[in-house]
Amino acid sequence: MIDPVSKAKWVLTSKNILDVPAKSLGLIADSEGIKHISDDFQDDDWDGSLIHIGQKRAIIINTHRGKAQRHNFTFAHELGHHFLEHAPLYDENGRLGICCTAQDIDQGSRRIEAEANRFAVELLMPEDRFRLSMAGAAIDFALINGLSTEYQVSKEACAYRILEFAREPCAIIFTKKGAHIRSMKASRAGKGSIMQLKELPEESIASTVIQGNKWQPSFEECSSRLWLTKQQDFPVYSCTHGDSNYAMTILRWS
Image 1 (cartoon, rainbow, N blue to C red):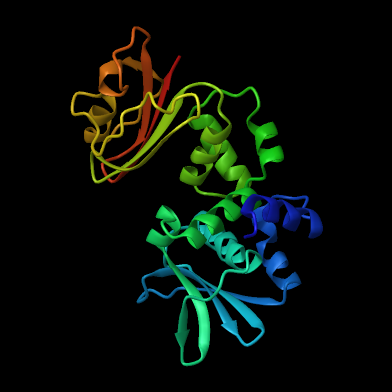
Image 2: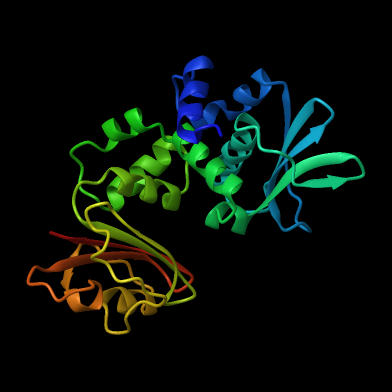
């Protein structure tokens, strides 16, 4: 089995990718003889596909699904399937391939999807460069917004990459349709402390902000019993941006 992170680092080095990697995805594909097409397939429910036609390869990105930053991650994900030598999962009239839905990419429940995700994360946000970009900065919306723009990735992908390297205990929660938690992740220092919730606590500041379709200008102290697994004496601070459709909440504590 090929290590996804090591392989992504090899690609960046061997292809001499010195600029923002997202800008060079097409060049990487070209260097491998992979045709790549981006088009609006509004009647289809997949995000991307790696197609095998004999010894030839092609990557198709469905631009109907998500924004440009999402398309970059999908492109990198499909490159991951290629470089990690994943076997095709379907055979349609002699055309083999791997077709990835949003759920495949977001959840990574299958081994090959999880591996392709790890490859994409390292390819788009290389650890050595990314650590330097966030060095000394507080975990807040300014950092997430700035780095997501710099690396041309979604705020969600950027936020979770930041958490991989954050030294302080913190967590980031993405919600949709009000208080429903779509995904949440804690930093290494915060794992085991944050409760795994499906809905935002009704009495939380985050819930109030989202219901009022307002953004918090700064972090506010909130009750630790709403978020942490054990009653703690230290305060928890939260800040929420977004609305009742989609929102992001950052939690920090010490």
